[in-house]
Length: 398
Image (cartoon, rainbow, N blue to C red; front, side, top):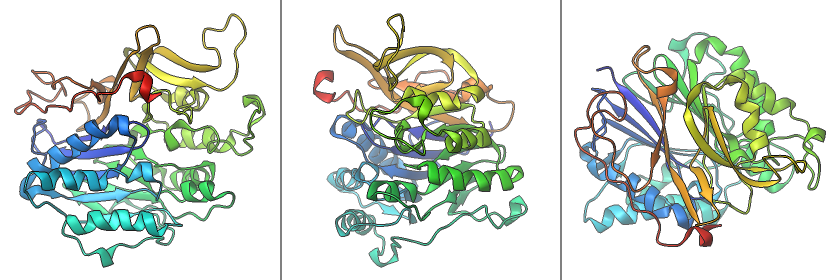
């Protein structure tokens, strides 16, 4: 079997926590041959799943080592679980380590720096090595061929690169913070996955320029984690509360989606969250390039109020589809308060091994990995036990 790279977008409530795992023999098991953590934060309803999963993978790793940790920017829902992970590992009486850490974004507050530095220390890193508010960076911009591409870490044919980070953005504090997010690209020799953090329309505009100029250097895009959880305000150029969708300027995100042309789009968001993430209007921007997969649901918020006969009125809706749009919240039944939520995995391997529709998989929480090759890459040698559902009711997580 050729090597398999899994980009695990973990259910973490309202936040982003993503693990990149490489298996040299193409077989998913407890011990990955390489581990990278891209953001690690969320809300209380997702803490058990995300923290348990990340800690278990690090504990099972060779040398109890996390090879790389990247934090896209300073918002707490992207790093608030770091210390919970180190506490979980310490509870087992085991000392873990992290080999490298990259911090994106600008405007880091003292409190947020302290939180991340605590994780550095417990993972055996020199806190003085942390570079906050680093200058604008791109591993692609000055390269003319793939051999000239820079990277923040590499293992075999898997590379973790920064497309853009530290972009100076004008506007309100949150626009500046989000717009400076590190946009990470995970590649193998043939495919890529984009992890853009809380990128705004300014970030996407700058990123599009790089992608268009270096299109031949970026492998085919299997998937993208939708920027800023699918937020509307940061996706359009002229958002104003109470406005109408058809009056916003969508040019930048449309150009970005077209430049990437991803097969799959995934939203990481909490159940019926107060921010109304993801917006279905934002997801629909990526729709023209999505491949067909098996029938499934994703849950999203509709900003524009529909007509009386509309099947998707303003507010939260379950969207049945065969297009490769997914969310960590798959569906919700208001009658009995039950909802399907879980992890979404994007899989990169050699061409011809997996069909496009097989490169994405929704893994419901509370279940074991399926016997007999749930990843289409052969039998799972060691089953991974996912954390149980949070104890609070779905209603309390809205």
